[in-house]
Amino acid sequence: MKKIAFILFLFFFFCTSVFSQTNFNVEIDTGLLAIKKDAGFVFSGAISYTASNKVTPYVNYLYSNIESNDSDLKYDFSKISIGTYYGLSEGNITLSSITGFSYLFFDNSTVNSNALGIDLGILVNFNNDKRFSYGFKLINTFSAESNGGILQSGIFFKYAL
Image 1: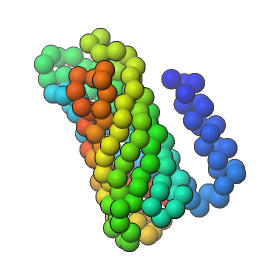
Image 2: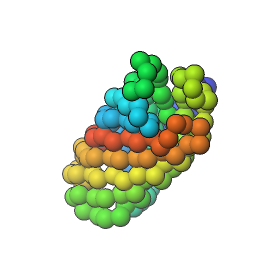
Image 3: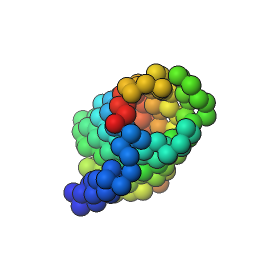
């Protein structure tokens, strides 16, 4: 886990020294995460690069403490994802699709500890033409190892560097 985070940090550190920093964004979001009947509060952070008006690749790290409804079991869930926001509209308020791949970490004895996933979702961004923007994000992650679909919903705040 620490090795993967270090490699991602080096990758984006190298990119910031090569490319102009005006196209990089830092995102922080929070909301709810649901895995089948289990739910929990989620914190997430992302670094994205605005390649064009429509395409923005990103790297995201998510953490949640899930509480099971079937039993009194609490477990940790983490996700590292790499994907792309594709803008479907332009202007002050934008609608974007989200596609990507995830590496999932479960701290639960009923599920494999690590798994791969596919992310699909939608993002609504307000105040997009300014340095600071905010919006709503809804992402569904499918993984064969989880107990069902993983649904992440919440609000985000984005700052353009």
